Structures are given as structure tokens and as C-alpha cells.
Image 1 (tube, helix red, strand yellow):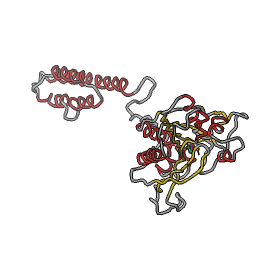
Image 2 (cartoon, protein in one colour):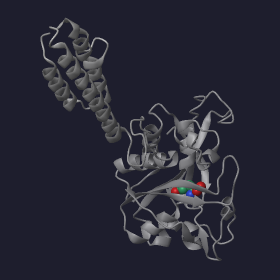
Image 3 (cartoon, rainbow, N blue to C red):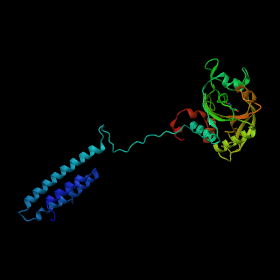
Image 4 (cartoon, helix red, strand yellow):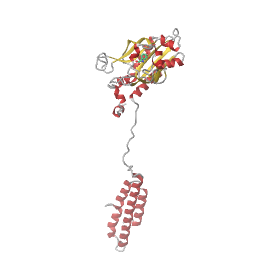
Amino acid sequence: MDKNIDQIHKEALSDLARAIDIESIDAISTRYLGRKGIITQFLRNVSSLPVEERPLAGKKANEVKQILSQALADAEKKIKAQNLISDEGVDISLPGRKPERGSLHPVSRVMQEICNIFSRMGFDIAEGPEVETDYYNFEALNFPKDHPARDMQDTFFVSDDMILRTHTSPMQIRMMEKKKPPLRLIAPGKVYRCDSDITHTPMFHQVEGLMVDKNISFGDLKGILTVFVHQMFDDQTNLRFRPSYFPFTEPSAEVDIRCVICKGSGCRVCSDSGWLEILGSGMVHPNVFENVGYDTSKYTGFAFGTGVERIAMLKYGINDLRKFYDNDLRFLGQF
Ligand code: DAH
């Protein structure tokens, strides 16, 4: 036998001192105590020793075997206690559970994207109150009292004079009262109307836009809104300006884009027209300028307003507006 049992004993213990996990302890057990292990073989070979050495060698080898078995069991217990089971009794060797990561709500996402597009064109972002006075929401925007145009929007009243704003257009007035031209701003935010079905929710989001300076023309309106549509959808998206009416703009136009679903051939989403309305716009009415004290002989401007949910529905092909507000994570998790 080439190694004596004391040497084997020493080596086994020093191997064990370096063991850091259950696998290395198992390997040491196999190496020394396995069927072909070093100590097992030593014991098997005791019979080939000179007769006088056999009793002592056998006794010692059996002692080492015992000591090593015990040391292996202790080491295993210690590693298990240290590594795998926390103080609370949780088995931390189990695979972890990934914390769910949230994502932006599609409405917030689209709102941000709209703001980014206009920021790049030099528009400032302005935010204002959702509880608004009749004056800012209607009167200053050239909806006279009892004007039938007020019926275009079903209003939630807070008191006789206070309402939940029905659109973001009052921000035009608030900002023009604060600042002299030139002015280039957008106003994103929540608006409220007494309305609820597949295409209407009582609260929704709009982005208002306003640009005022000397020599602003309908051509500027068309140019800016064309850039917006091309950046929001894609630069192949056709758009058209269709005459319309709003009390605070003259002339007024609604902007349609080629149906993003059927590309213009006609489908259910566009009611076979091939076009989808996405915003209202127009040249700021002189009465509105007068209400904020702007000189109508010097300045002109354009304004527009768009519905964020509507843009999000068209961009992502969502067919029911109410999905945005069900808070179903299977829906929201897709964005
Ligand atoms: N405020 C309008 C609405 O809620 C949208 C709108 C139309 C805004 C024309 C404008 C505009 O600034 O010029 O339906």
C-alpha cells in the first residue's frame, strides 16, 4: 500500500475543509468511502499486509472511516443550514419569482408621444385645472350663453358657475391671458362629458394646441398638423381637411386620416368612408383674441384639439374605448 492511513486521514479532512457545497461533499464521500474509494480499498487490502501489521491497520482504518463519515454528515448539515434554508424556514434554493414590471398605460404612452412630437416643433407644454369656470370653458371661447353650440358637449356641473372642463380649449384662454404673442403651446389633460357607450367614456384625454404670431396662416396649420400625423402614424398616411364648425375658430376644419385598418377601401371601422376623423382645428376666432386682449389687426393664429384615446385606438387597433379603463392586466400588459 502506497499511502498509510494517517496520510489518507489528513488528506480527506483537508479536502473536506475546502468543500463549499453539497456536490463537493458528495464527491469527497465517493472518493474516500465509495465502493472504489480510497479507504474502502485500504480496508480491502489489509489482508495483504504482513500478519503483525494487520490488526492495527484495520482498526485505524475503521476509525478513520467513522470519523470521516461523521465529518461528512456534519459538513453537509452545516452547508444545508447555511445556504438553503433561511432563518424563516424559506428554502432559498428554489428558483426566484420575478417581480412583475409595470408599463405605461397606452393612453399615457400616446399622450407622451403627442407631446414629444410637438415639443420637437418648439411647442411648450401647459397644464391647467380640470374643474373650470363657465367663462374659460365656454364664454371666452365664443360660446355665448344659451348658444346651441353648448349642447355639443354634455357638461358635468359642480355648481352654477363651475364645471368639469368639457375640453382642453380653456387652456388657450388661460395661456393667452398670461403671455403676449408669439405663442406656441400644447395642453394635454383630462376632460369630462356626461356620456358613456362603446365610443364614449365620461372622462377622456385631449391635447389642445395653439400657435399665435404675426402672419400665421391656414397653411401653417396644415403644415404642422401634417407633420404631426406623419410622425404619429407614418409618413405615408394621407390626410384631408374637411370644413367644420367650432365657435372659437373661423374657418374651422376637421382632419381625417386614411383609414389605418382598410387603407381607404372601406371597412366597419371607417363606416365604409375610407377616412377616420382625428382632430378639430381652425384659425382662432377674432372674438377669442378680443377676449384676451390680443390685437386682431396684428396677430393671427391657429388652434386644434385631438382625442388621445381615439388616436391610441387607431394606432393600436383597439375596438372598444372602455378597454382602456377596465384595468385588465392582460390588456394593459401588451403595451
Ligand atoms: N375643443 C374641441 C372639442 O373638444 C376640439 C377642438 C376643435 C379644439 C377645434 C380646437 C379647435 O382648438 O380649434 O371637440
